[in-house]
Image 1 (cartoon, rainbow, N blue to C red):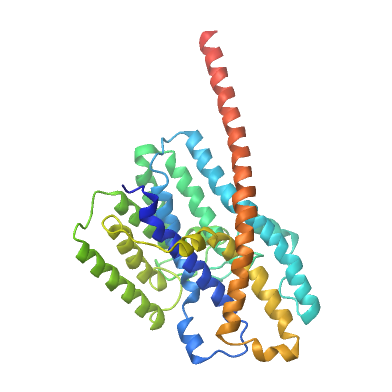
Image 2: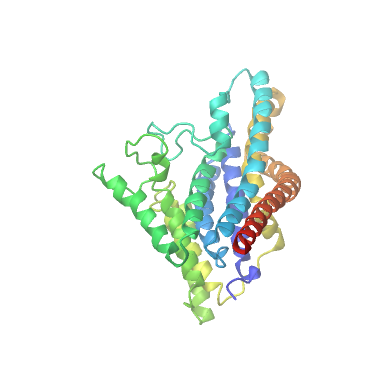
Length: 384
């Protein structure tokens, strides 16, 4: 039952809405002036990042229930993640450079000028700056939305390593979490859950010990709860809980209470909302509109494509003075968002579905070939 894809289509809905929210947030930044309504209604649009992190933890749990602790499963897990993330990210990062260079040539302002080292770090999912108080971004990446992928990839790698420990995987997982988020930070004299906190560490350990990781952990815990026998059988109670947590989330976001990334801020309400949706989906049947499921499908592309569309177009359009009167307000934000969705759909079709799938199958073939060779060698050794 818990693996019924229709039961968790709400995940795709949340993914899609999160990507649209982040797109709107960046489009909003190009308005010369923001109306009180725009400032209020979209004040928490960047909180889509918190949704992505919580969802990642949840998805890793429910998609690895068949883990057999083998190295083959371990490598297949990493191949799936790599093929899903890297090709699209690498290509769109490269496309971002000439797009911003064109913008720079027209507006006489350079916004992006990465070094070779910056590009290498970006394509390896390593933060550009890891020794300064720039939490939680740590210098981000060349394609600026990629700063969150640095966290995602770190989480995937250490989650993958935990898969090798079989029935002890969760003991290892939570042991690693305790070490990196509690024990090591305690040496600085204080443990913080504030995503902007800087412990003063040097290098990559800043990301490893970032309080933002707690959102992935929250997603994992929700995933384990979802897979457990626990269930609320009364549908009326389920709907009341959904109504309560949805209204609480809306109040917290639109009311401006504790804005910012992390489990003490926007993530706090999202954890309650997502926990409720996950548990009640075992009893209720959420009918998600197909367009929202589709939006979730293209959410990764939308998250990466929209800076390539929004920033250059907004910068260049503003240089044409007769057009400036139309480059403000909600219609302009919606246009930039819609245009980003169009290009995200193209990216999804050609980069995510075709290129990523092709690369995944090629890497699987290589892995299967290596595994077959080892099996044959073992058989020959046994019979010799």
